[in-house]
Amino acid sequence: MNKEKKQIYKFLNNIETPNDVKKLTNKELELLCNEVRSFMIDNVSKTGGHLGAGLGVVELTIALHYIFKTPNDQLIWDVGHQTYPHKILTKRKNMMHTLRQGKGLSGFTKRSESIYDPFGAAHASTSISAALGILVGSKIRKKNKKVVAVIGDGAMTAGMAYEALNNAGAMKYPLIVILNDNDMSIAPPVGAMSAYLSKLISSGPYRGLRNAASQLAKRFPKKIALTAKKAEEYARGFFTGGTLFEELGFYYIGPIDGHNLNHLLPILKNARDHSKKGPVLIHVVTKKGKGYMPAEKSNDKFHGVGKFNILTGKQNKAESNQSYTKVFAENLIKIAKNDKKICAITAAMPSGTGLDIFMKKYPTRTFDVGIAEQHAITFAAGLACEGMKPFAAIYSTFLQRAYDQVVHDVAIQNLPVRFAIDRAGLVGADGATHAGSFDIAFLSNLPNFITMAASDDLELARMIRTCADINHAPSAFRYPRGSGLGIEIKYPIKKLAIGKGKIIQEGNDIAIISYGARLQEVKLASKKLKEYKISTTIADARFCKPLDKKLIIELCKNHKLLVTIEEGSIGGFGSHVLNFLINEYNILLHKTLIDCIYLPDKFIDHDTPYNMYNVANMNSEGIINRVLRKLNIKKNLIKV
Image (cartoon, rainbow, N blue to C red; front, side, top):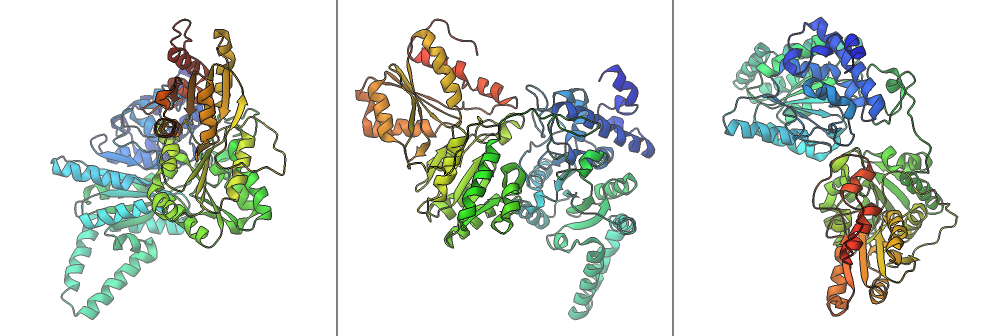
């Protein structure tokens, strides 16, 4: 922090670790909360990132580090959107200006980044499972530590969270789960009463009394004991709504005001000191975007923002072409106008997938199922059984969470579910956890599937149109994050011929066949290869499955080198081409050289997409170097 900031942040300037937080009085903690908020807003305004969730958990974060002995006691944050305050308090304050930048701090928790991040997370609903595993492992190794999982109400829509709760409740380990509920409000009188009751029922004497009463009730006739038990549950449920969690084996406390340290601190202390008898769930109510008016007034509460003006909250968005996501949404709307069977499914990402636009136009044909990708896919399969035309719009990285449903419920039954796969390839600031690296391989290897990848806006529109009429098999089309090329889309749109690619330009020496959005870099590479007197044919594959075998054979026959390129891992398009050439065309008997460019066998850290593809050697310079090496031209290699 610079000198000007040191004068502003009176308390935060002296905070390096959670031990420094413990030195403050309750009043000073409240002032620290204000400073952490201000510091976070200041930094995220310059880097962009996930702001709203973090603003909502400032008091909770400070309270947790104040009460628990981190990093020995371990905090497991679900998703990681809300962890900026946590990073600020745990030796990373002076690195916040590098957030989500190349070689800077991750936007999520990351084990390799800090000892205060015991578990990495960027996908939702993993915290309870991980926390339980860590706690059980520590007990087996005879380590004395508390483990706390912090999970949001959105993440509680996923079945995995309930699987973990059920397991933890049955195991009776002293796990502490904090349900961060930022979609609920508590009126002041109810909040005060709730806090008082929560403090009471989280205390040792009450829990001991309750257990004693339970033992005493067992001595009464069964009917009377059952009535007493139901009355006690009803009394708790009336104030707390905790019956479900009690049935799962958790001791429920709450709901409490997550912005009131006078409520949070004693309850967390009680939970810390009296959790030995089994798992505890504390229901904390917070306000997303808390303390920053533009965020509080925003529809998405500044969940994810670019760089912005602090005074106005206005984001500094450079003018650009329409995003691929919007191209998808608007073209699906146009097709759905004349086809009443088309419907759309999203798993808690309506704005991220563009389906918020579709939802406004066709609310009865749009379904947001929550963070439940497994359910989303099988739900779509059920819709297909009834003759509907479901488009499941899911990020590539999130589709991984539903692979069994894709195989078992869609592919095996050959149901015509259409998969709109957003964020294909490397995605930039969100890093490896959100990279769409594997869908080409894991979908194209499934029987019955038809798989496509869009090279530009128009190709995407044509693929949507094509999929709408594929009624005999499951189909998928992938497209990258970010802006398209601004190509004009004229209507009506022509469908693609299934399994047919196209020649973009013709040359005499080498052929490059691109599957997806690397096509523009291939074109740049082709221009530069002219300097080496290398003439290039470029083809857009369009389809990975079925392959355009005729096109591939023609390219092999007429060129001394065939290069495939894709924004995916090994096992995808290039692997399918090689398999065909070896087993059906017998390429070993011909003189054509083959090379396949795909993502390297490693996870690539967050950076700009261009820099990430540089690491992967998949920008134009990397393509040129690959061609020169394959042709054994050793001079003038381009520095990547």
